[in-house]
Every structure is written in structure tokens, then in C-alpha cells.
Amino acid sequence: MKKTKKLVLTLSLAVLMSTVSFGQNIAGSDHDFSTETWNPGGEICQVCHTPHGAVTGLTAPLWNHEVTTATFDLYTNVVSPSFDATTSQPDGSSKLCLSCHDGTVAIDNFGGQTGGTEFMTGGELLGIDLSNEHPVSFTYDAALATLDGGLFDPTSASSGLGSTIDADLLLGSKVQCSSCHDVHNGSGVGNLLVKSNAGSALCLTCHNM
Image 1 (tube, rainbow, N blue to C red):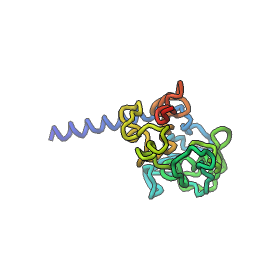
Image 2 (image 1 turned 45 degrees about the vertical axis):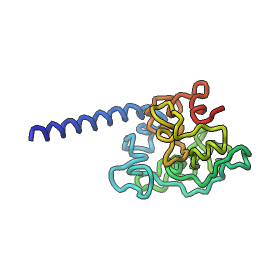
Image 3 (image 1 turned 90 degrees about the horizontal axis):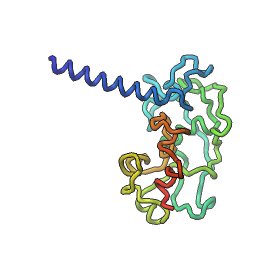
Image 4 (image 1 turned 30 degrees about the horizontal axis):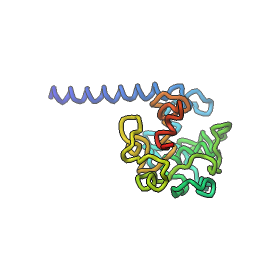
């Protein structure tokens, strides 16, 4: 009985510590909306996540925000003839990011709200024309690296974050917004990057030239 109580206490402390660390990272970052007038509850997490009544069928856990239904103009090999990947409409976590950043969904459309009035503006507004943005939601694997010739093999090349590009930066072997951006600011790097881009270090993680 004593061992069981000790195990429960240890696990509880571990969860608490991870929660405190997480909160400290996102607090004060560009994704900390706790002081916004349109977020009267003042909670950091609830704009995107909820413990109850979450939107189902998505890659993000316990999603709480309205999801975009926009059709996007894509980055293709017509825009860049050297681009060898096959693109499709944004999916996975990228679609969730665009559910604020495309400007078609109000930032305050969360918790079942659909009549929000706060929309993304300025440099953070990507719009629905992504043809001049870094492509997302495409498969980046060893075959693409070989075909392209200007990319590292993601299954063997280091990400600089502890493992391979595929393990640390890709989701289901796809490049997504989260391949470069840490929405929870876990790295503490500016612009919510997963690691510093000083000397183009982040770019050169995948591009071998």
C-alpha cells in the first residue's frame, strides 16, 4: 500500500512539474492570450485546447478552436521549378495553425463560439494564398531527398535536437508548420522557432546547400 501511494505521489509530481515548465514557456510568448479582452477567462490554453467537448477527428489533442474550411493557393513547382514534392491542401497541425493565420476564422472563435470579431492582422496574417510561403503538408522522405538532391535524408540526418529530422521535426513524415515553429514556445527561441536560425541553422537542417 505504501509503495502504491509513493508511486502515485511521484507520478503526480512529475505531471505537476511538466505542467509548470509548459506554462512558463508559453507564458509571455506570442501565443499567450491570457490578457486579451476577448479572452475574459484569462486562461492561456483554452483558446486552443479544452478538457471537455473537444473537436474530434483532429491531430491535436482536445482541440477547442473553430477549424478553417478555406481552400488555399499552394506552393508548387510552377512557382518554383526546382520543387520536387507533391503538395496538397494543408492538413494536420498546419490546418489548425491556419485556423487563425489564414484570416478567415476569428481568433476568438473557440469554445463553440463562431461569431468572433478578432482577426489576424499584420505579418502574422498569411491569408489563403500560400504560393509564396514555405510549403507545408507534403511528404519529406528519403525518396524525395534523393530526387531533389538539395535535401538531407530525413531518416538519417540529425535535426540538432537529439534525433533525426524525421523523428524531431516531421509529423507522419510530412513537413508541417510545426516543423519550424514550436507553438508552445518550448525552445524559448524568438518567433516561436523550434531552434535558432542564426546563420540559417534551421533552414540548413533540411537543406544541404
